[in-house]
Length: 185
Image (cartoon, rainbow, N blue to C red; front, side, top):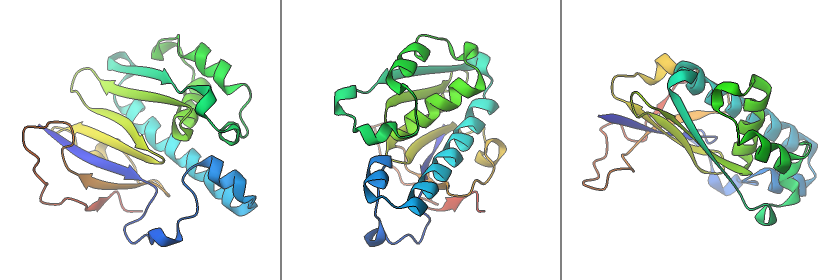
């Protein structure tokens, strides 16, 4: 009934022993301008990619939930280049998705990518959803009537692979093309 996808910053042949950062906190501690530029670029790519899901499933039938991370658990480095993020997230969390303008929605998505809040976008008609699993990794569940390339365009820095059903616990079946990367750039 559903197809599952992993959305990640890691390309298929990524060497994890070379990994230097998990989030913006790690990047700012490195004090490397190129790494910071790459992180901020990648963050924009993710916001662009997630917006494709939001744009495809009309705002009228898209539900969302937001929960705020405990600000005492968040490194100050995560607030890099954001003005009063906690106050702003608190204010925006009170509004319906239909009321948010593009600037505010992109701000929330950026905060989501950074782990300052948790968002959950859910299509009320099909049950399709997107949610974050950890740093720069998201789970996408699409109803079988939807083809992923109808919704998303290839986006540099964002890699999509077929994942297994991690929601239902009746029986775990690996799809035939489990791990296959899609939306090639």
